[in-house]
Structure formats: C-alpha cells, structure tokens
Length: 144
Image 1 (tube, rainbow, N blue to C red):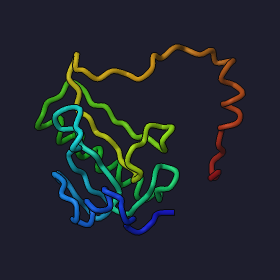
Image 2: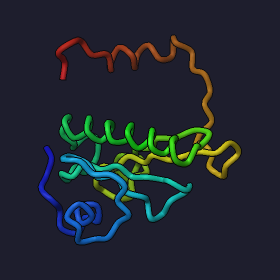
Image 3: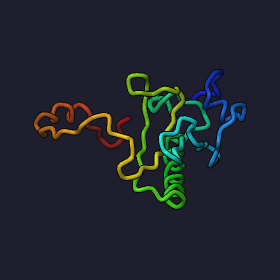
Image 4: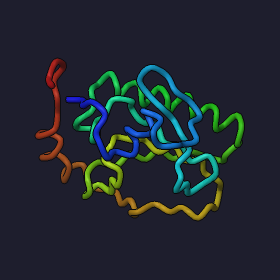
C-alpha cells in the first residue's frame, strides 16, 4: 500500500531533507511545510512521510496522521494569522486536479473577499435522484 521514498518525488525529497522546504511542523509520520506556490499567506501542505500516491494508496494510519497534523496546523494558523476562515483541499489523480503525486493536504487560510473562488456552483439535487447512488455506495459496519 504505502511505498518507500520514491526517486524523483519532490515531497519524498523534502522528507529526506535533500530538497529544501520551509518546514513548520514534523512528527513521526508527517511533515507540514509552507507551499512554495502559496495562494494565501500561511498556505501549508501536510504530507505523510511514507510515500503514498493519493488517498486510495495511503495507509489508514498515515491518513489519520495527516488529518491530525492538519488540525494542529489549522489551530496554529488561527492563533498566529487570525484568518476569517480556512479551506482544506486534497486532490487525487490528474482528473481530480492532483499535480504532485504524493498525497498532500492543503491547509489554506482565508480572508473575507479574498481572490480564491469555488471551482463549481452548488445546486440542490432531489433526494429521489440520489437514491440509486446511495444504494450502491452504502456500507455496512465491517465493510472494507
């Protein structure tokens, strides 16, 4: 499932300290660093230390650790930068807008009226239209 450091992976190189990065937090399983293509001041990336291409590839333990670190960084961002809000963003595979193929979670401080916009407009869907998909996706306790 999870892989050793992958040659050519910039995020694995950050973990191994062969690629410089402005690291703001590190623990046994994760690293958090400021995004060099930051869209807002304080834009932070949280990654698992063990290479995982995306959410479908990551070990549950590492996924939980990434969210724990994101939560910790969100609190720190609120304390220090005092944003009006916060956006978490995580993309998977090219079709999902992933551009670095090592799982990463964006923690983006937001200001009221900033330049960022939703990539879609949400429109309500009738529950009757969702029923077939709900039936296909529903899990029972113990399902994988």
